[in-house]
Length: 157
Length: 173
Image: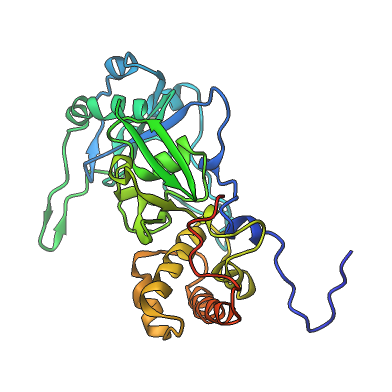
């Protein structure tokens, strides 16, 4: 056991692998038979999701499965949590909007995650997502709020 | 699929690749050298920085086929037989990293900065030269200090006659 003298700098133990490129970050992990996920994201800033038809994408080579907000709801999977909840002065829990892992009913920003394609290789997942983006975009149309000077039409929470 | 051949960290390599394969994918997935990282999807972060024929490039913006016949050096190719490159040692000494994700790209960029600007680096020059490398953890202060020290010590080592040369691309990994 090394004893560090008072006043001496305490060196980090983990640096060697990071400065030599031997870190094990999530994407560095490689296991036989592993699959890859690719997230399909909304090109719209604010839109209702009318319908997502995943059947054609699901049939593409290497695709293991495609998940959307509908599957999360079916499986009763909750939203992303807030890591540190606080209470109001009267003890009532804090108010916060919902953060689903995949958009439910509505997308709220360009890049909002709509679906995840899981396939044997990342390229296969991307191909399945991108080749059917047109179908998903059409389904994600719907009413968009119009911003007029000095007034915002909210499409609802 | 086309075959691509190149020398990576001193070793000749050759593989069948999809034409759209990026150099960073080739390095990480075909060669299993995962020290080079993919940090964005927009060529902004620099975590993918490697040396191509002696010059720093962002390997996410180079197709593997473009590196045909070239010498590639990755972070794994900097140290020789357990002895760190002065730039790597400087990052360790000066606490130039926290999570370490940007670090390989920073070190590869730093070695290139020294090659082009010399061993005595002004802080202003280092900060400008690092425009293509993003770090979310450190606030850059210790990275800049590490690069200045790494540049100085590389020079000192070389001046001692045969210490640590700045570029070790001819050494096998």
